[in-house]
Length: 369
Image (cartoon, rainbow, N blue to C red; front, side, top):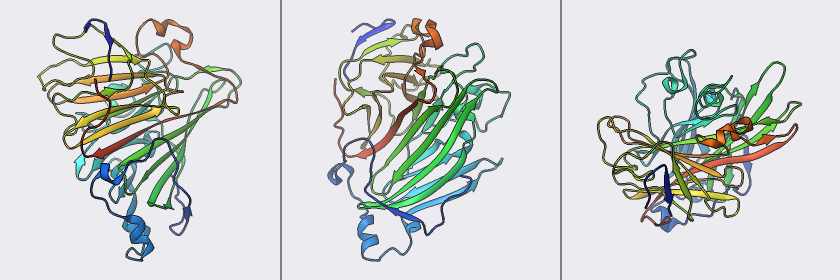
């Protein structure tokens, strides 16, 4: 196995709908079903609703519309036998803290608070389950665009939420719009829908990215999924399907691998890598993180996000693994191409893309080396 820059091939709202408004339809979304045997003991929400043991949908799918200290708006979801997580309208409908059966899933940065406009992206980065990077830049700053772009720090508009009864329980949907524009030029719109439900610790982020401007524009997107302890443990290895080619941004420190977390160490550097050539099945790609008693599955639109970047930072007090599907280069010579290597979105054109995160209890059965 090579350990240089080329690490070789590896396997691996402003309002919500009235409480009485309930849609009933079959659940949809990417990914195959996860059986009850895989997820362990469950709460049969459909049965609770069918025989009248639950009077209100709030009893199994609670949504609290809150203002945190400092005025940030948060939609706090608590889902029976599913996720407890924060949806962040003031941060582009990204995902904040997330818990599963009392266990934290999302990494939290060392920052106690966002210092606000005027500080850099890194100084304002609070972590959370998902931070969306783009749509004008990902990676280091470029001419006219700051590090990782503006989506994560842009308030969503027209935010609304509702519940839907499904054959297996209740889904909560959150929708909103995030825009990026310049006065005389770019008009990009992201229509985002977030879906999470009872009976399954899974959250999906479904984006429609539209160019409302008059000219083609390069649109880099990166979904910065942040996983932390305790499901991320020393020795954890992110498992990838197929035989992707891995390239690291800098030469690997001695004893390090891009996809494996070593023991925490004071001052340990981050390893940033890109993995190309992951297989796409049914339009989807995935990565699996086996952990103590459960595994985290990150799944994304592989046809629109053909690259996967990872960020492994095992320093004491940091301890994070970023799983980052993207459509553009984060580093390397491809960034010297027009639009820094990002694909072009034509006037009036729409992309459908997104990412899902799921925690599955039970034995680890993801891809293996």
